[in-house]
Length: 282
Length: 142
Image 1 (cartoon, chains in turn yellow, cyan):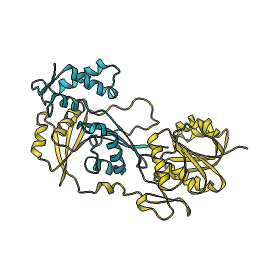
Image 2 (image 1 turned 60 degrees about the vertical axis):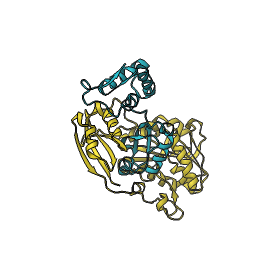
Image 3 (image 1 turned 90 degrees about the vertical axis):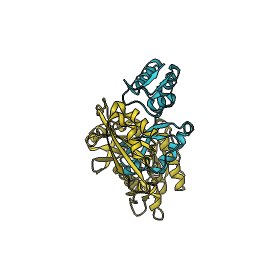
Image 4 (image 1 turned 180 degrees about the vertical axis):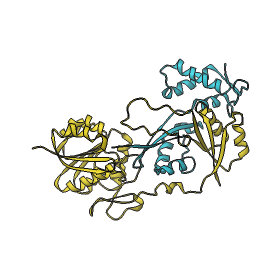
């Protein structure tokens, strides 16, 4: 059976009425999208202030399996809208999303890989709802830190653990690790990742305020949150503190609160992202 | 985690019917998101509405490492009005062509359902929004 995509340019105020009409005409589902060139930059968790105004028009895409085209077009005829049909390539969607996920070699002893492409002994991380698939600069920076320090520490705490990748990497290298995150879906996923790797790493939504100090404390968050949690992160640090998720333009804000209290041991830069490794002062 | 948002995908999918086919396949496949995991969790979350044949809006946020999160919303007012009026579609010329009728009680019921997603805090304001949508669709409120 062939899928066809029906595209219609609609005034924002009519989007739900038109979407409802398309569902009634047999659409398997619809997508609300921006017209080409009109998408505003995605809003980031650290953005403040009012979001930019939404464009007055948008693009509704609807998908039909073997549609009766005149019937679909007639369902919107009274609105007099600009419409178009597009072929949908025959694709195995259940597999195609995996393209581009490759094993990431941290060192001879630590490789992170998706389940479908995992070499023997790799830490298996299935990409999903927890941030930390191993394909982002911030995660990679702290994986290097874990690999460098794992032989010198016994305990590791991952604050804002997402998929659990950092705590799991530490456990894989013989540390006693645990992870916390306020996001419940991430914790559910981290637990599954631990099971997948037969690693015993506790993950929970406990607040960082309840965490015991660990030899190595890791926090791959973003600058604003690192600054906000500065006192707690220092309290949770036995010896080493690894911070990541810092955009280079905001590094100074993080340095301003941590430098007066700890010794900067390493600074890693990858693209626009900076990671900082601090050592507790004796 | 240092989640940088790269994309937000807004879909409307029948409750309990997400599968690796359009619209989920092309929309999420292009973003490199774990389609099976999304479908499984969407279908689990919307199972209670599946029997009613309702369409559920969902906003999927895709992060820079292709991990994702999503929130489901209540069905659009337009969908609930069509269902209540027992008609397939709204009017393209609502001032001149009326396609159906709903009662005040149905408007109140829809407003209660939609209250969590509307920009208002009381039921009367929500009912006014529902009435406004009904007018724009050519549906009469008795």
